[in-house]
Length: 247
Image (cartoon, rainbow, N blue to C red; front, top):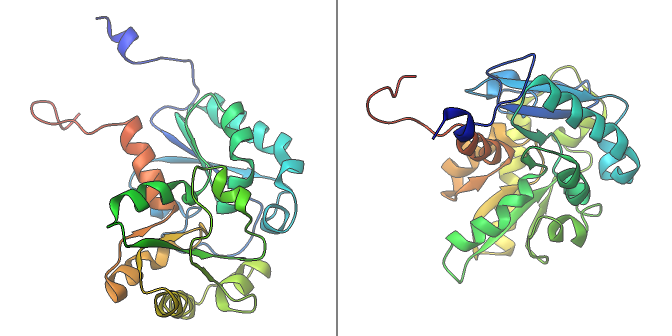
């Protein structure tokens, strides 16, 4: 079969970048491991800031009001040459159906999309615990829109804790050690309240810098936006094996 039928081709000004990342309009420091730190990724990514749309607009407000700006960002990224898209806030699960409907390429809107898979991997007597940035703002719709069940145990980052304060104030420097301690404390409380938790999903896209510490401390599998995008990329560019594998 001709190669052109096996590999879809389309004109693009940028080549070699498979993943496009829609980043909310922020100014706080992004640690390595954060979705908006280029050093996080072992493959090239293309960033696109959604100007004028802040985290509070998505979390506390109605992200549907900003759909036109997200659609424009999707169109720009696809026109640039990406083959898959993701976002920098788990709360965009609220508009996953709309973003999916608009995007002509696969789109991973929220790390919450991994909950059904994580549940299916666990023994039947185990469940998934979710670390969230704002429990009051997280509605059943966020879960249902990505095919996840409701009623899962949630662990919340404190409003005045180091992570949410860092994001809310657009702090230019992050206290990584303090943020890690906060995340580990949240997981410890979750496990004390719900011992049947068998895996952790991090809703917040700023939490992957601490996923390894969660795994090392508690021995649980951890899924976050980075693991979701790694999975998305693996499907867009499967590894080669055998002769010619280096290509």
